[in-house]
Image (tube, rainbow, N blue to C red; front, side):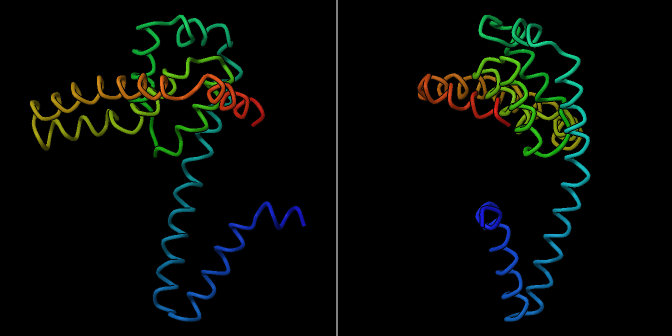
Length: 176
């Protein structure tokens, strides 16, 4: 019974997919195709991310992460969060397991938000594409607007979220 409760969303999705296939086979097959493509993409992205997470967890001591990205890290923590987010590869859902490891390592909450924002907005491959396709002025302007915007949003979010809520988030990361 506990297993059914745990996987109720997955089971419900499969049932909806079967109903869709019965009601409209063409749309159902298209939905299955999209689902298969997404699962294949995740299967190619998630394992390398988890390997890197394991290496990060083992090779980088908590004290080092706290020194460079923890509460007292200041500007160097912000710069490191932006750089790590910008050079990371993969879709945004890959950032969240890394953010959880950062929480276990004592990284400041604001720096985690900056990291996630940089991952989603300032990717180096995207910047290089923009340089070649849209020009230097567009690419640099967008980057120079995005980075302060990410930092500002991270600090605003940090002030609106209570310390208790942040502690709960960190506790959830510890139990994962």
